[in-house]
Length: 432
Image (cartoon, rainbow, N blue to C red):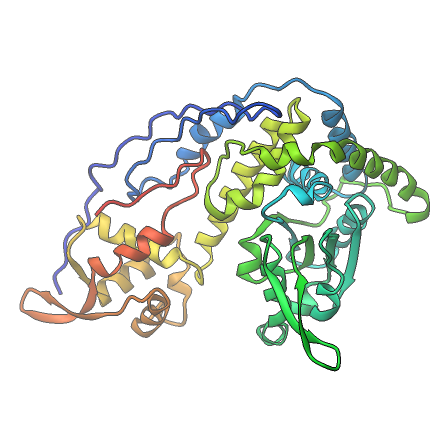
């Protein structure tokens, strides 16, 4: 079998420094944006060196004038940190902004989910939900509730759903299949105007039920991909030696949290129309931008350091989830890894199945070598690529033909699934 000898990719343009756009100022027109330049998505575009330069644009944002909102957000952040240790400052800031965003739900087009997940019990997931319950707008706390009960709890004035022990709903494929209606409900409620249609009464009259509501969902292990994709994801972990928090006692601690909640409600009440009009510059795009926009708008309304802190949290946490998805062999990583194989070989018209498979399995940084006793098999490779409409066929090699894949069959999937969410917000593009 003869293949092109791997070579260093050529023609990968260096990423120019992007100019970060001005922060949206409440009550003023949307500022002009200077979009991050778009470059070809070669194999070097997702390297670690891109992150510091990308995040430097976020870090360089100046503080805005601070007012009552900035002080209230800081007080809420302190209150949350008193009872639970979050995995990072960015996660703590995101949780703070998410709580405040629940008080402005009439202004949002998208209702971000807060996915509070951890690898095991005793990571603080339920404790965080305890604190959120006492600070969000109109909480509805559920544990293993039926979809019918949940969507009947949502009205035109949306409450805030808090779903604990989600692993009892989605923890195994069998559970997830059984609770497909709940997953669909949580997905639909991410966007305004998505309804559940049911017949009610003896005459079976069709009735529309609202689904739009912000939701915090806590459980062991990841939630279904479609929910995670609509979520601000906080990956909890157990406290280490030396880390301590104050025990949460509802009778003792709830009055202080309710006082903060009431002040937040009073501060946000006159801002709904202003929040509705704002279109802030975002460090991410597409669904990630839809999900994070309410949090960034809250930060811009509050002022002080919060516009910078919100965008830092957004950029870093979204980039972290992109990396997690790439490290997950069931995701689109297979496409990105094959993209690199083609690029490293000079982007030939085709490569054989065996060459692609052996190269994938030989990568010590990738999971494919452990994909079964002999690594990823031709059948396994074909099954994963078939999800993206990519099939193998006969390709020409010196001396005859072998099974393989042509580059043009990957073009559409690479264009759709390979672009990285760069911390500055411009998705990389693929040129053919």
